[in-house]
Length: 365
Ligand SMILES: [Cu+2]
Image 1: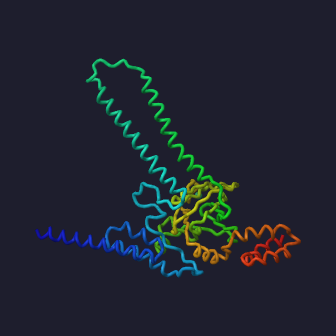
Image 2: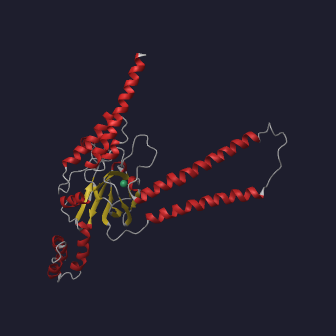
């Protein structure tokens, strides 16, 4: 009787605690980045919920909004990375990924499940109903036109229905990038990645895997964490120009539904738009040599102002597309006219700081 009483009290306490943690979550969420909200939800017990929710909040608070300094963001557990015993896709944060996720879960899986169960049922029925013991004289039926039309027409209809969203998804993945897309050049090396932002004037930098000790110290998953991430602004389309320097690699980030081969001598192109701030991991997905498993990819999606701060920390100019528009005009009359041509470009205030470095190499030629 006493143990029952303790059970009831414990249950009441934990219920109250869960309620309290839920009550806390909305209060914390608006104050902080959206990353804090998903962390609070899955945690069933108050003590568990408090700890992870507090950690990102603390790190977030350390970086004042709009500040020009860049501090690598902490990943959110369970987002943008594999989870233990997980069998589902990673939560998708790009429009194409959401579309593909929907296609799989709302169309394909139900269709597959219904067909599989239907065929299994038919098999069991045939095995039982037409077993030798119950049918000493076998039926001589060979054809049934009506049934044959049905079992041809229905699968054709099912395939036709699946084809519509399937082809739409395919077309969406191959849609050409928009003009305002951010261009990043990705190069696969044995065994690391190189990233360059030509429009922002950020030359190629190398992204290598952290050691176990470094990853643990940074609070990141080992074999996914890297020293220099690819950093992109939230909500803006990113155009990747992907190539390989030595052998074929493959650039893949599951949370964006992005995968593209990095082939030496070829510039492959793909796009993604990340619509949620966070850190998302991927891996080389083409067997490329002994360290194939040790060249992870980490993409950090930041609010635009923080991304701009990161670009500046790399010595680049965030107003890249403006520069890109101005640069050809400056570079066109090379080599003799390069110096005078730089002056008109400098009249536009935005392009001014970037026009000088852009013109400099042109003048050298
Ligand atoms: Cu590789």
